[in-house]
Length: 453
Image 1 (cartoon, helix red, strand yellow):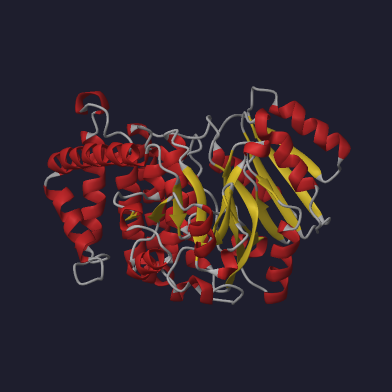
Image 2 (tube, rainbow, N blue to C red; image 1 turned 180 degrees about the vertical axis):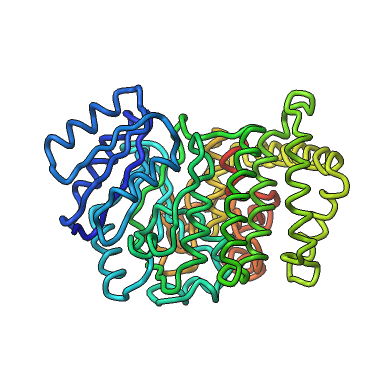
């Protein structure tokens, strides 16, 4: 029995496949098997897989017709002989220590699954840019390296999005009948797997090591239209059936499920707001979502008494006035776009120094990158643990050092709140008030990755 079976679902990815396979076969954990599920590729990917299978007996290839990502993953899981199962998307890659570190943590603690942090990247060679993505849940720093029960942390449903950054005990998957939604294509099937593995687990662990590299610039990656809303609806119906079937185990996650369902619906809807209503014709789709969200409220899975009262009111508005909701979101997107353009023009010709090397700074870099504004010259932070580390292609330095090096810099505080102390610090170091600003536009991960002006 191999310690870890690594499943690679392959469909027309010849450009990235060598980097992916080389990284897997270079693992310091030698006792692995690699199950490459070829989902009817037509671009030469099968020949690349065959060349690896000829050189390394740990590589097994499953060839099948193009039936979709979910079926590929299920076939891979069934074929796996390993104690634990890992997943690597074929346009991503992993560092050599990844599976040794994950397996050590899993086997020593006897957990159902263990996940690490990961790197998000784009570009290649010397132009490759990257940053580390950490567990995004309140109190995350207290959760690392501890065995926890997800029942005590239902917000994991909202915050823990990616399934490929960990390994899963195969016996845990088999015992609970956990499988991917077997639908055509490659859209959203990972959602159902995430819900099942979080809801049914009793012992899990997160570790800080970020050995998985997640690509964000594959032009062939899934992009969604109105069809995407329909596909996502089908995945969430699959999840709801699972939750109803296992109600006692999943009821604590009901409110988080509702919130995640609505957030993903809203994000997918935003992607088609620049199209005319007559071209998209989403009336049927909106009716489907109205019915589903109304049912959740009627069953009191989500109520105004919960902390997110604003979200409850927003959903109720959508249920009552779907067309007005759509039109308002479209207006809001156009208004935000005007603010983005104004802000980009405001930064033109400035030497921008980002203050605080966190999530918001990463979003700003993404946004400026996509809109061809190469105005950032440095990133600084007061956190000593970040000094010398990399945020994409920038080395993080102390604030005092950045002020000395960039006396003519424009200091943009990339932080959501509690910025008054940073203002005082910068002023005390001699930076003029006219050369400091807080971020004045909303930049979240989705908007900055998709908003090209």
